[in-house]
Image: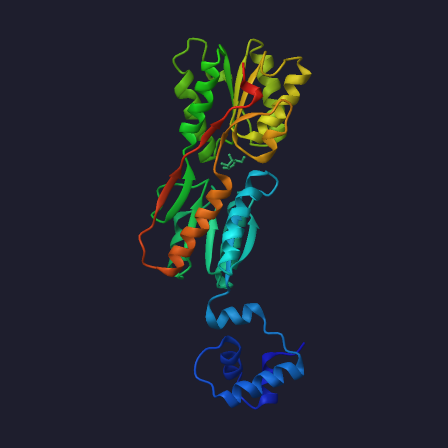
Length: 330
Ligand code: RIB
């Protein structure tokens, strides 16, 4: 493979001069520029993107860390980030961390060494020092969705608790008398806030206790298994709030297997507003997050911080919207 050293030797200039010509940096005479480029063409040298970023410290790349790529929420979120990034000439590194602390730190270490221009992080397993380290290296970061508000940096999420209250109150308003919750992972900040939103609505009812809450993990399968568990514990259940749409999709199968008609015997509301929630039978009511817009707004904030490194950080909580469909229309 032809290296930058080969080009320098052939053009009888230093490696630093070739690097300045490639990155259009520093003072180089027109004669030297044309000589270097003719040698580059003659030898077929392909400047290495990583090598380019080493000098300019700008790789025109931003990284997006997500906790999984198997849940349809995250591709919709990534699409919003990517579309705006491309309109500003940035490429995206998409990093799947499985919300695993080791994978988060490995990715961040690797991204720092590649002079990535900015990072958008959707992860529970993020520590304050991770963000401080990025900041000290001049790499702006925005935390998104699953975030913790105690850090000083920019963050963007939605009103999870209020959204859960909208869902649960709707089930009460349509006449449900026994309402269960299929919650998300217990260490997930978004799931915890939704659980509190549900509890705020039902805690006064004499029938309510912890047995009406089934511990899901945001997967379709856990929605199915949790709904079967709730049927076994409480055959009289007539309403359920699933903390995300994937689990709402899974619980429909359990309702079918138990011979329960939706919404007549069991009314259902999910959370997220993923496209698939419109195509279940019956279509699922849900608390819609502005998923695509949230991705775009996170990228917008990152670009603002790149342009103004000393700008004030911003913390935003976007509104959610209750979308009513057949699964809760009585
Ligand atoms: O469905 C995936 C869930 O994880 C969403 O509710 C989103 O908020 C993310 O935290």
